[in-house]
Length: 92
Image (cartoon, rainbow, N blue to C red; front, side, top):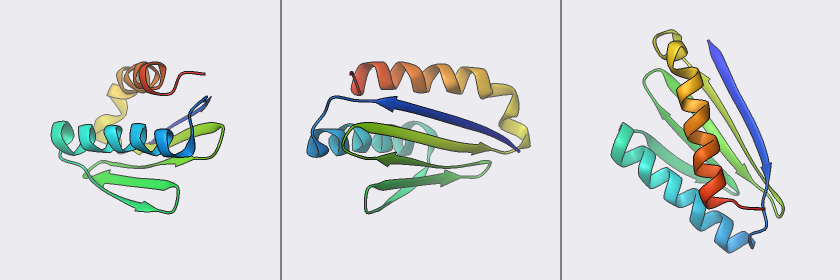
């Protein structure tokens, strides 16, 4: 199993940060058929071969993803897409 861990400071309000995280969750559900649920300020998501969580606080967003064996080869592409999403949705 391979992991991706990315932390980023953001300049959003709590409400705006949650809205951006919800946007990510909707994309994961629509594009990758992932299920997700909220537990406070933690967005948990999963599907076969992938499990992760996105955590929000007042100044930072963090994502932790565990990739199964079959998706390990896509780790660099997944990391690049996460950085791109954070750049667009969680600016400092």
